Amino acid sequence: AGRLAALTPGFAGADIANICNEAAIIAARKNKTVVEMEDFEKATDRVIGGLETNKLISPEELRVVAYHEAGHAVAGWNLEYADPLLKVTIVPRGNGALGFAQYLPKEIFLRSKQQLLDMVCMALAGRASEQINFGRVTTGASDDLKRVTQILYQMVQVYGMNETIGQVSFPKDNDAYPGDKIYGNATAEAIDTEVKKLVEEAYERTLKLVEDKKDQIKAVAELLLEKETITHIDVAELIGKRPYASDKEYEEFINITWNKNDDNNTDENNNNNNNNTEEEEEINPNVIP
Image (tube, rainbow, N blue to C red):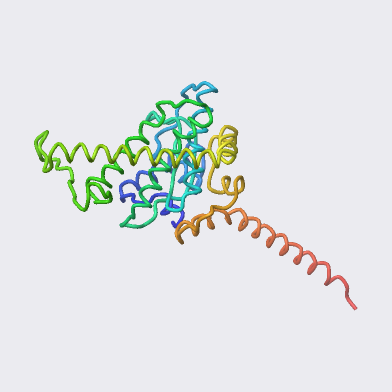
């Protein structure tokens, strides 16, 4: 239950029910008599990222996707306030995604300016990785750019986190008529200018981070090309422990996952020891004085 809860942060009861149904279908297709955690993990991937497809991707495109996703993963790994990585894959999905990464969002309701900027940096890292490693960018960052734009406009326009615009808030009114706003053209132009400035600064910061961690990105990308799906454990073994401490919930989830095989091995060793003891007890009584 703890691992499933960690895999589904923010999910409503209906979403979790959907995952349980999907996990049961996956288990049934494999003629299993019980639904295992592996089935729940695959069901989570399907619900979040969509169904796997047999879409044919050229080796060159697949390589770009791997380096793009590796850029996100490594940037998040080395940013203090980024959400910690759970899993990253380059398996094409039915929703059009050629790859995606899953993170464990921190259970916090208030974010500082630096936390938001780290989120922006991680979102831009996929495009930055393409530019650093291939000398060109692709359309793969379209969703990332939408998220960056949304975060930065909220910082400037809603949260009052910009010195030029000041401590004011102009939230978007969905019920207003098109063109209606409570600020003038000069303010609108200033908001656009400040957002553009923040984007440029964030991208320069991201390019520097990607350049500094280029070897890590290459290692993660090559492992992705080999295995298609990798987890926190794979990344930690490949490039070392995350330099910033993670929250308690994340550490508990990782420890459960990491120690699963160790627990199985321990149980097997205990069974072997018990068997050996029983054999000795059967032999010893034969030595009768």
